[in-house]
Image: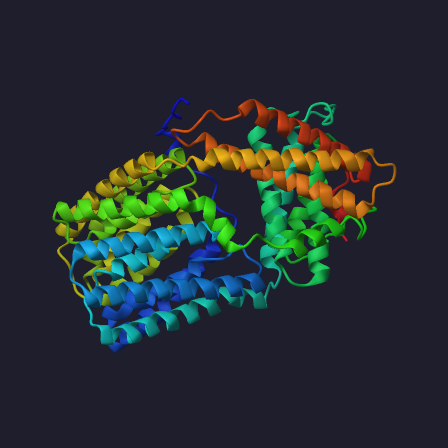
Length: 555
């Protein structure tokens, strides 16, 4: 199979900022500020490296409903402090840098696969690896470990409160935003479909297939968010809207983009939940109830396919750390964390992240050089600059990873000065060397450790789509199919299609594997889209296009 092209310019292109970029940005600033200012007042800013472990948990789970967010954040805090505890114990028991790098690599691999298996979104394993790897090289004794871990737990508890506080004002904000995003992308997809297109005969009527992929992924993500939410009344109202978004994907020419956008606008504000004026009743929602009852597959089953990623991460991080040690760098954990941050779903995406990491870090050390004189005026200035960089990192990273790294890099360098001022020239040199070493060695490890399971997973995804399509076709052939069965089958087919597209894209970017069944993938997708459109027509869910103003469809 020919190797995928490795681009450069496109990798650095800026995207639109995330709709909720300000939420993690503000949360992490508040979560970091209180512990740091308290330590500053007590004259113990040297302990801030431990409270940062808990405070940075505020970066996670902002896309989750509050009930799910409470659980996820609790696990993140426990995972963060668990990694910190292992690292501090290892650091207190040995002075061997080789042993410490090995421990850091194993921790990074475990953090990577657990975050991928649980779909713990950005920043995923990178922050966990940064904290545990840096802690491996902190001075301390075994007797100090409980106190340092307690500081992290205390800061983590504060971060949990900060992230849960917005729920007092908008208890259903996350699921409303996710549904609004799905409706907006579905409307954009429907806009691109020619008015006279027949989605039954032409499953891809518009000229931009990536538009449908993005919309389908957004709808699928919104379903996952809504199904984990509490409150039957709100959840059912949002499920009705998501069904309308799915209908727009299956029959775009028969949907009304203006109405979808009007609903999305209402969801983003504080207005009452929109109520679609159609005949959709609880029978059509039974498919979602059935899917919710099934739940997710066991964690052990989800970990299995990630074995190649675990080996890549462990090997790449270990070799990067060893190479840094061989070059005489005093902080090999920077190379280790650089390697840990690279690993994505396939080699091509890993290459993209390597380019972004190198560009962002090199620009970041220049920012650090400019900020050092200011931060050494007083420790208050040091704390305030770090808070500003925390905010900047989260404000920019959704536009492109490299842009966020421009703030993350100087912040990580300045944290080393909480205990005492460092030689800035040496810090810059070591960070540049470790960045280049970590990116180069990490990428070589990604190429060397092939992920042949990517092809197997694509085969399984293809089979799942074909079986879901056959089930839908049999149900459509029945004289009087139950509405609940139709809805459950349509939902299953839509979810299988999303998984197929994601799996196919991941496999296409993987090197050194057998040829992919590209023609079978295209045929399966086209057939499934036709069946989806037929199912929508059989359910009578398609919307007659209207030109009503947004006010006319609100309730």
